[in-house]
Picture 1: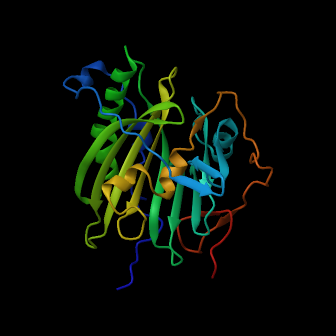
Picture 2: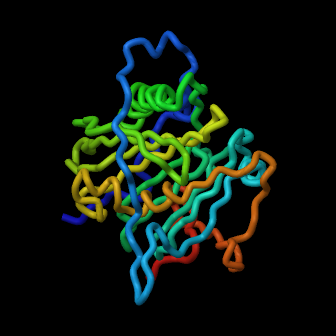
Picture 3: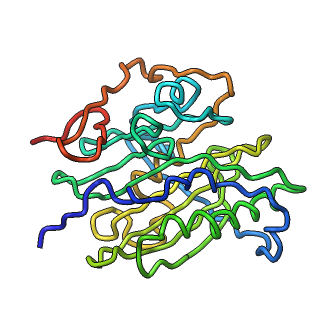
Length: 279
């Protein structure tokens, strides 16, 4: 039977999601778990004659800063950042804000030719107060992901189960990852879920990235793959925080900014990034 899941899964995520991604009440931290285990993450290795490098890939910079929030009518970002989006024929981009009605900062989807979802990646703001030690802050962030983010992400799915939570590093910044799985009601389609809280060292304002990946269609086949594989993993590990006064810049390779095109008529107003898939 042909699958009918589209790139617009999780559209029913509550609008208040971006508003609850903070943890500032010390009393709420009572009984939280202790120090987190550290796991190193990668995005693969690019090899060639006389060449080897970790995490190198071609892509288009996506800058989320003052200019981006003004254009899309989003609240001002206390910690602007940019990511690199890998080039793919079946990549869709939807900015958040009042114009689109999307509560997140941005939504990136990668799909099959018939627009069946493979991975869906979202970014929201996150607030984690500075603590006595960096290790304490990691624990606070883990509690935020466990008690606030995961319940909302999985609220409309079945058999949601946390698999792991650990500390890692993303472009030199402390980060916490929570891995989970869930099943879509009525269809039995299973998804991996990964939520990543990335925290700059000297600011309580960070970024939360979370994605779902189809267990059958994506290249993420095992829990271990969540540490190394996938479109979303590449984007997340390209994240770089910018100065608060930073403004949008063209791609560093000198190429023109990608044109955004509307998707199929009658669907949610997703936008295609880079170019349309072949008919």
